[in-house]
Image (cartoon, rainbow, N blue to C red; front, side, top):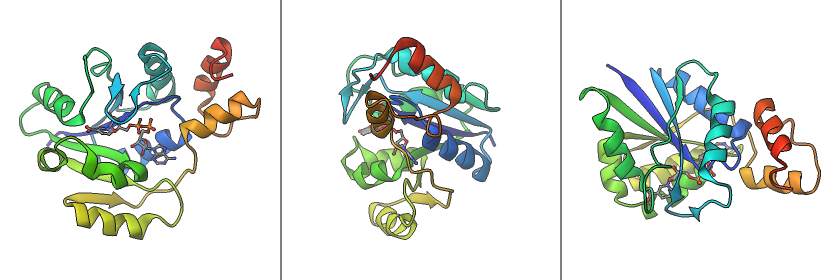
Length: 195
Ligand code: DND
């Protein structure tokens, strides 16, 4: 059976935390493909100050070279809020009926998951899998996941970094080369983003 991961985000910018959980999840779940899905208009953040095209390009630079990874512009082309359930349903039509889908989310999204649009349907129509963002979150996340429903918490190596931390450090002129893939950092520097 074809197993497909979906990893959505603002990716403003994509960082090593995103890359590390996506790579580990693909391996642990034995996915044939991992789809990286930058948001057009995020349901919880609205339109990003950084345009879709720049975030999509940074996703290519962060993930494009990884085997089995693909970046989709599907949400960049959609109008209105990009509810994940709606996008999942469109993506599913592009694959064989028996393909199995896995939606990857981080801890903050797990704790917010019951506010997502039709989250019960989302859990019914794909496998939702969650990854910790900080050390020591695993058992509380597992408890929370059980209270929501059918969500599996993956036991992955944690990388403590966030996009806002990266943006703030760049604005302060601090080094972020340990937090962001080198090609993404070059792209950011060339365009003087986040300063
Ligand atoms: P963010 O803008 O929070 O992502 O968006 C997450 C995704 O959830 C997007 O695809 C949204 O469209 C979708 N969403 C959100 C709310 C409601 C609905 C859908 C709905 O349908 O109603 P970021 O760029 O900030 O991060 C991307 C992902 O990576 C997130 O899941 C985040 O938790 C995770 N993450 C990490 N995971 C592990 N270690 C780290 C991480 N940093 C971010 N260091």
